[in-house]
Amino acid sequence: WDPVSVLGTEQILQQIDQTSGYFYWVPSAGQAGEYDFRFTVTEVANPSNSATTPVQSLTVNPSIPTGFTVNGIPDPVAAGTSSSVTVTVRDINNNIVTNYLGAVRFTSTDTAATLPANYTFQPTDNGMKTFTGVILRTAGDRTVTVTDIPSDGMGVDNITGAQSAITVVNNVPAISIN
Image (cartoon, rainbow, N blue to C red):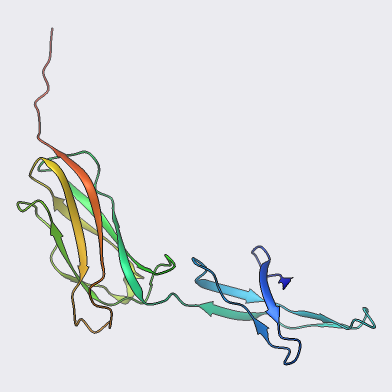
């Protein structure tokens, strides 16, 4: 394993097959994104004899969706208060799945909650969408869950994510002592 410079980033570990001369790199968790590579080859017997390739671009795409990150509702939150919640589509390596175009539904352990309507992700969402108008009404520890709607055409059914342990408190009027 020899280090290779990735322009604008730290060096990464990679391998060059000594027989074929092919460059191999298996991205680790969280390494989806755009990378620019430039290779310099130097002759061992004559170090002054070297050649550098033009910059080569490589896109590492995220894997298929495996879950949702759901967050943004304050904890604690006063019953009846409108909140926003952000849903982020993630793959097994925690990359954002920017090409997810599936549909999701919201549920809550608060049966009196107001939740967003079912939503189909759009290309401009890039795997992340903030929803407004989430209203939890029943005091106690509550959960808001997002579930992929089966057979939505994405081929990834039954993925979920939740924000849990949201403490909903009743509005208590302030008491002023003079």
